[in-house]
Length: 493
Ligand code: NAD
Image (tube, rainbow, N blue to C red; front, side, top):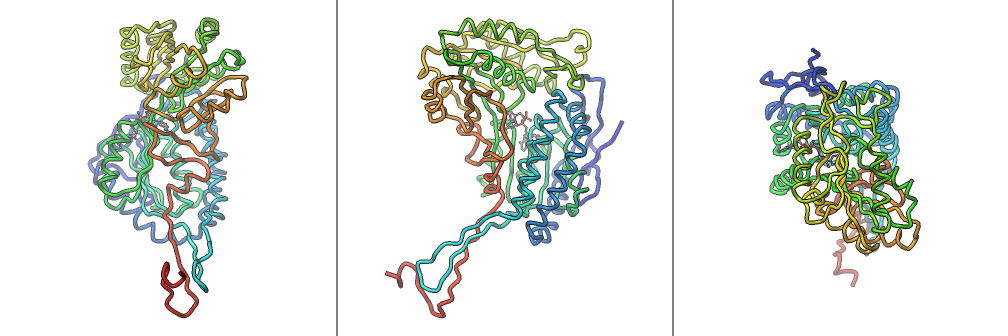
């Protein structure tokens, strides 16, 4: 069995106590991908020391040069795209046509960030005094801790790592223990692109390693993607330490279908939004809100199409829905199905595991649809993170928006309508960081702000130009060339 190592200061190292964990293919529990270090505080201490030492030179490397390295990284991601996509599918399950998109997002992020090395704009503005100049520019923050979920093992880390690096920060990355192999390839690619040793370090492990990173006094920033419960806990520690943290957390995203919508288009959208990545996306469509005039008709169409979705190993090109990530998540989903039934919602499709034939050794759960779901039910309100869609009936446009907004999360949202007035009102009134018009709740592009409000985020946005706000501090400079003392707010009155 292949043994993988942490990457600290450019070298492969075991965990300090030699402990490891196994990485298992969720489509086939007999397929063990390898062992990875089960790291703890000592390993994090070593990685942070390495990142801290490397920061001295990296922050002084001209930003366009840093950008050149990231452009090369984009080229290498492109070259290794197919190989990497298959590695990702093997360790986290989603079909390979989806993992290709995951890698593409990192390629796009590299190329975008490379050009940002030649911008990183600041401001030069007039002074209120004579013979004085005011300017401001961005400076790196220092050692950044990056902690991520497993469901986008390359794209999500790239949204943090690539902008952080072009800004001149160094990194300790604690990837999810459910997708550690992808993180290893990420490190290989950055090394081949020419990133100096120590600038990017990878420490594998579980909660203990993540907690040690958050707690480390030399880590100036935590970039986190994961569940809302973990994110809030991390935020409380960062708050007490006065440490910057950006949080990308859970979602419970709604797609609205109005009675004037193109139903075939809305159907394609919800099938992709709800069951793509087996519903394990922060932006997955987990609620469907249908206008009462088309409620029965649309549900019948939905059931007839969802029944035909093909479950299987994501490495098989005909697979449409892959496995759920692990046994723990499988039981969580099953538990929510029981809760939904007990609450009085009607399960009209799926509702249990699929263990037929080749699926017997994997974590497969049938696409599941509940109808007549009310806001008082937990399956309406709570993130399930699996192939479970909760369908509710709206009596009007206003009611649909109200239902969409009854939720503690605020990541993505969607409305299908042919009415331009309704579309614009929805853009304004839906409480979410992202709203799609006549498109599903998933489909973010790398150059646009990405993130959510309410229980999903803490005010930051990844993607595009907004990511650079997270990873830089502002330095303001006043240059007085008058040759005399000028007192602001006093001498110019
Ligand atoms: P999780 O919160 O269990 O774990 C996320 C990461 O945090 C893992 O690397 C884990 O090891 C680490 N971690 C756990 N406890 C920690 C602690 N106390 N201190 C430091 N690190 C700790 O989430 P998950 O199950 O891996 O991922 C699923 C969740 O991620 C879902 O809620 C999903 O919506 C969310 N997600 C959000 C986005 C987004 O951009 N908003 C994207 C992808 C996934």
